[in-house]
Length: 105
Image 1 (cartoon, rainbow, N blue to C red):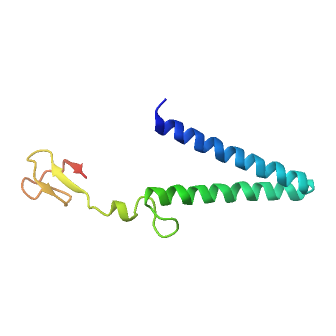
Image 2 (tube, helix red, strand yellow):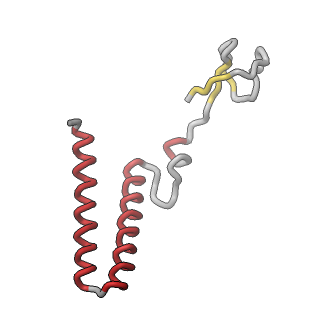
């Protein structure tokens, strides 16, 4: 098994065990209707925390930046004309007028 996959699976298993442990502890100490609400709230809080943690690790920030528009993706998309190869950022090629283009990142 790939080390990255093994690390990912062990991390996911760890958070599942932590979540179940917290849920069992809440259901042990609180009565039924209150424990159900507390377990759902805890589950949502753990998911929110894990999402923020993963986004921060990828460099997109927690609240400050979005995933697609973060600081890491600030480069501009350039286009190249399929007919003549001219690079441009317009709707049609300035050299030959063709609207056929491919994106270059």
